[in-house]
Length: 130
Image (cartoon, rainbow, N blue to C red; front, side, top):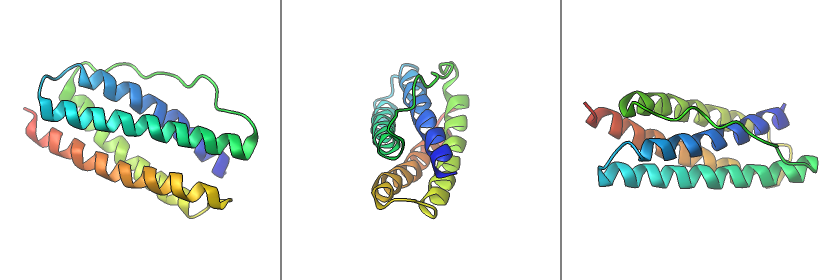
């Protein structure tokens, strides 16, 4: 069960990285660009930590995650991303309660905390966009 959720997390972080990069290209607002850059760099870090953990537990990496469809409507994408980040917090909370090895704790805690921060940033953007 944990390995299955970890695989989902890896695929989700990969998709979020590319999705947020596509959102970055849709705005020239320096604050939103800063928010999005911060978030896509976090997602890349989560992806790498989770791949490392997956390898530690299985001896393999998750191969060829799929890229998402790029964002074309910033406000709609921010809304989708906000909901996705909140779902991520819930998933990582559940995973923290079932960690099979101690080495899983730090990456999950970091990712869960970052997802909460991302939800705040996305909520701020959503409320400011017209």
